[in-house]
Amino acid sequence: MAAFNKITPEIAAQLKAVVGEKRFFAGEAIDPGYSHDEMPIYGKFFPEAAVDVETTEEVSGIMKICSANRIPVTCRGAGTGLVGGCVPLAGGLVLCTRRMNKILEYDMDNLVVRLQPGVLLKDLAADALAHGLMYPPDPGEKTATVGGNISTNAGGMRAVKYGVTRDYVLALTVVLADGRIVELGKSVCKTSSGYSLLHLMIGSEGTLGIITEMTLKLIPNPLCDISCLVPFRDVESCIHFVPRIKMANLDPQSIEFMDADIVTSSAAFTGNPIFPERVNNEDVGASVLVTFVGSDEDELDQKLIRLGKIAEEAGALDVLVVATTATKKAAWSARSSFLTAIEADTKLIDEMDVVVPVDKIPAFLIYIRRLGEEGGIRIRNFGHAGDGNLHIYCCSNDLEEEEFKRRVKIIMDKAYTKCAELEGQVSGEHSIGHAKMVYLKESVGEDVFRLMGEIKKVFDPDGILNPGKVCDESLAAGKE
Ligand SMILES: Cc1cc2nc3c(=O)[nH]c(=O)nc-3n(C[C@H](O)[C@H](O)[C@H](O)COP(=O)(O)OP(=O)(O)OC[C@H]3O[C@@H](n4cnc5c(N)ncnc54)[C@H](O)[C@@H]3O)c2cc1C
Image (tube, rainbow, N blue to C red):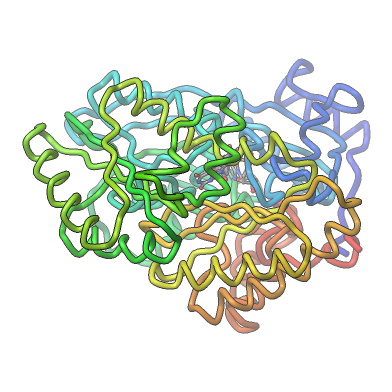
């Protein structure tokens, strides 16, 4: 167990001197939500104190005090993570970025924006749009902070065309564990200038440094878009359709997969069935929701015609164009709320966010369904079919929590082994936190896992930054 110290009244006074009385919280004044993220099944852990920071200098001041006194610090954005990443496993201090929420400046000549980490994704998206620009990463949870998105390398529904958060980060200001402030990256289009510490910081989940400012790349907002739903009789034919869309050079923005079960859950949740369960007198086994973007309607119409042709060849039941702005909005908001729909009718829930080669999706889904049936656990899934990223939810309303966890562990152990056999990775976009560390270790192997730990030590020799996450096993004994 790492040897951390408690926040004494003297240390609390020093922390208050940095942020002021009003932005320092202890005891009952701490938001109880800080003990968990959006996956509470991974346990609740309470900090001793919390601070709301507003500037890079404040973060530096806080880190200097915590480093000198060996106080663990867990950075928190909006707490929408799904792997227990922002949860203070070792107590100590929660450093929350919610007040660092300013979009600082646009550089319209270079199409970049400079902002603070606590800006919400939805606010950046709306503000960029008002400038005629688009921030392409589009994870489902729009109330996450952009700093959280960078720290988890969030993906989302537009990754198939545009890539993930990592592809849009040009530069970061980072406060290191000992309070030093460093600038990583520059606002340039390419670089080949030594080790990319910028890219090491992206996806590092608050374990290597605290991100306090970001420079991000934007693109001109596409002038028009079109979406359509392509339903199939079964999962296999649906997934085999996905590479055909890509091979036809149609360059879709999104290809989202949904099976019949999640469509039923979504309809029950919204009270407004958006996605059909029967088409042409046949049951729909699975569908993909496809979007194209472009600069004129003719271009998109041409793509739609070509999509129709390959859909027919692939055995689709139909191609349903989501025509009006209202239906498009309804379809995408129903898709975005799949997880919320599952949560709404489920007492106990755990999740996997594996990524496998696209052609291996059916094999993985068939396997996981069988595991669910054998283990008496309801499985719900949906995913980003275009990039092989599957969100698998293990659900129960009947089991006691301990029995649920026992059964789910058996399923997860087997599922991650299968994922490795299929040449997949543990997480496509939700990251590792503390919940998936054991599976990361198995997946990358001892040597790579140890290298990760050695990198962590270079940045954070005393292990005070977000202890117990990603590759830091120092708290493992304490958790049992
Ligand atoms: C309904 C729902 C849908 C979702 N859909 C998607 C999706 O489509 N794609 C996807 O990728 N994720 C998705 N997520 C997961 C979640 O929204 C993302 O992981 C998001 O990036 C977390 O951002 P946050 O601000 O909530 O970060 P938090 O949960 O607060 O923190 C996440 C991690 O980042 C670290 N961190 C946060 N800010 C900083 C900072 N400034 N400096 C250093 N470290 C920091 C924390 O310590 C923690 O390790 C979804 C979640 C929900 C609830």
